[in-house]
Image (cartoon, rainbow, N blue to C red):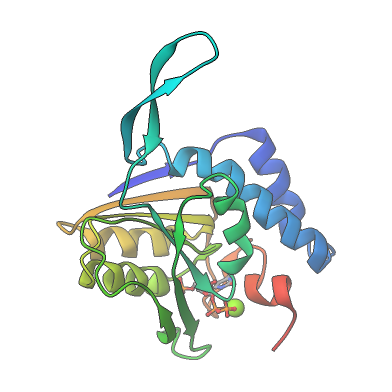
Amino acid sequence: MRVHVADHPLITHKLTVLRDKTTPSPTFRALAEELMTLLAYEATRNVRTEVVTVQTPVAETQGLAISTPRPLVVPILRAGLGMLEGMVKLVPTAEVGFLGMVRDEETLQPTTYAERLPDDLSGRQCFVLDPMLATGGSLIAAIDFLFARGAEDVTAVCLIAAPEGLAAVETAMAGRGDVTIVLGAVDEKLNEQGFIVPGLGDAGDRLYGLV
Ligand SMILES: O=P(O)(O)OC[C@H]1O[C@H](OP(=O)(O)OP(=O)(O)O)[C@H](O)[C@@H]1O
Ligand SMILES: O=c1cc[nH]c(=O)[nH]1
Ligand SMILES: [Mg+2]
């Protein structure tokens, strides 16, 4: 498994505002989208392309186009939805599938409550979006789901990870398919409630309000 932690002052600046508990939902939503766009640059480094010919006003030349089958972007509901626009702005031809997952607050185990994905993901390049990688349970379940449908390589983009969760994903994915994790930051630890420290609190609640 490849892990890339973004090291850029613009990303750290935006994450700092996102972490601030006084940042209101509209600003939080705008920042989650902007951060995704910045991380997409790294996440799509290995997006599959094919050579195409293009006629400029001056000459014929060769360039690259994102190849088919088109990449599949999968935001994990709810919180991953806050990153979707930031990704599809950069890759407008991508298809979008949805996975709804929620973590039990006591056991910290994830359950999948919604799924709208192609039945056959053979040969597909998938991009999973979820701002928080805490215990890693949700991300492991999401990647397992995609591999079970035949996905070939999966890149997950998370804004903040806990070291414990990152290690759990690494262990679960050892010897499996092609997995890359792109992160805005790796924080200090998880607390007893399974929240990332310092983190930013509950990303879903901060994006969309308490439920
Ligand atoms: O790494 P884990 O320990 O599995 O925790 C991370 C998950 O928790 C959050 O979702 P949550 O369950 O709060 O759902 P929500 O997006 O609807 O708020 C987050 O968006 C991840 O999906
Ligand atoms: O810190 C955390 C952990 C899980 N989910 C969140 O939204 N935040
Ligand atoms: Mg939540």
